[in-house]
Image (tube, rainbow, N blue to C red):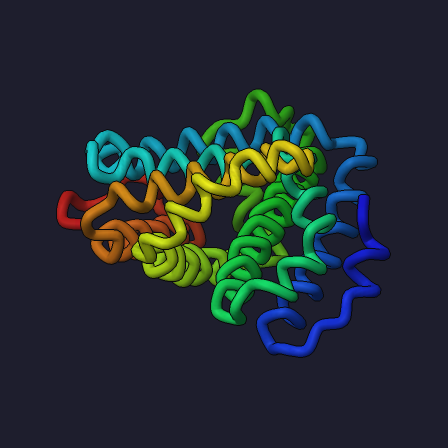
Length: 249
């Protein structure tokens, strides 16, 4: 990995400082997680939660205008098992990013990194709480999940996670409305392949395409956030069916 490159890069803007700090935190967390005895269990928990999200937001997930955006969220932004090369390459190109990208784009990338980091930290804590209760990750029920959730010492981070979904989604929407970006992504494919950055380029291309096809991102984000806040309240208050939401949400 490329920790020294992150540390030794000269950063001056607020966005660059934030991105550097978060990439260092994420780098160190990835090393910690890679050696954790429950690593494989964290993947099972991530899969369980991805399926729960698809179920809770089934109407949005099946909507042709939102499906691609939600699929990107669940498979690219929330895919801890398959993005090691992408994450390494972000570290590798960090010096060029802070040199060439405007600060508002660095802030957007920082939000993406923070969202991924918080999500994976929460998954690891949840996995450890389930393990303490002798509950195998591949046998988790809604009741098991909610019990461990209520025992969390990171509830403020869970609230922050929901806020970040809204912030990052709105920033991505503004970002992809710039038509120049699509042209740049198309033109940079071959250079990216030559620099062994195809996975990072494909990630950016998928995100651009997914959000570009959505007409009303604000509606999607508002519903996601409102529903997830209700789910959180339901779990913490011991609701018997925490994932069953009113039709008007």
